[in-house]
Image (cartoon, rainbow, N blue to C red; front, side, top):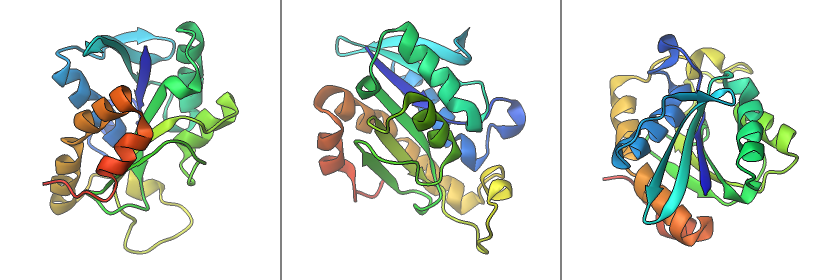
Length: 191
């Protein structure tokens, strides 16, 4: 079994914000698997499905972004999975809207959701799919207003194009590993 976690904030007021592209990505994957991610379990909304004989658990933590590690660690423990069985999908300020990058492991990059996960798990050895949301025009120390706001129409269009690539990227990670996905998709612009 593989655990796929999209990061975001619960609540309708956050649904269309930049910070919730991870939730939106998980919803697209669920749609392709013809399943729903709506069962409340271990501080997350979860759903189970199969892709080519491989079990996938999809999750959207309901702890708010800064506490994402609580839900992720509980799910890994409950299902007896290792961090290597985890893929996290999240927004990235350092990528332009419409860009996507895969990493096999790493640090937090300043992302508070990742900080929570790595802090609780004690490791950054898990795959990530980073979805670009860009930085605000004037960069200050606090980008909360930016990530919790809706993208402009042109940015939203670029983000949506990237989101459509996520299921294909995820299948590559699940079937062949994150390094294969990195070689195949890093640097490729969505159509």
